[in-house]
Length: 242
Image (cartoon, rainbow, N blue to C red; front, side):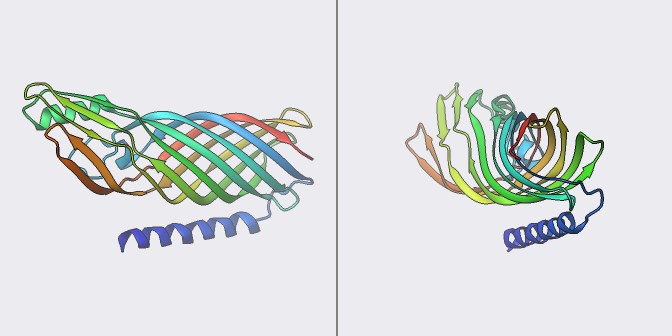
């Protein structure tokens, strides 16, 4: 029930933002434009996703990583808003050292931990409100909603005194994703723009049948909801197709 309420709240919030972006016509420009953007930057985990507390069931032990996106957009510059489709991904490193420290503090063993990455790929539609700064530069507020495909890391933990080990395999899930943030564009010439963005991305996939193997021969299955909220900060280049 809580998950359904959160999803409905996000959908209504997104609908409100799109309505605001689409019908607030201040600061309108004079031309329409079709464009392609590519940007690259860093991804910083937030909240439970970055938590390193083993007592928190939703702690992700995620660290910073990289983010990239490809955008196709259409700006109704005479109305001051635009529509966009974005394909993006971000990779966040699993904090092996943090997880290892928590295991060593909470047990009597001596642990070594190795893990790879969280990966999120998403496909999103949205709208943006455009504000003219100068004849060559614009600022925008954007909101997007779409489908996110997420992967957990493979985590290998070894205890040296018994000895004992267990391995958690990577698991995949899809869920609703949402994003909002700020964008900047500087028109270098008729075709090329320099772009920058600062965007919050949120998703809480439910990973089912997470499989773990232990040296004792035991096999464990569990289900976990993992918030995967990040801030992506990117710069890139845009091509005007007019």
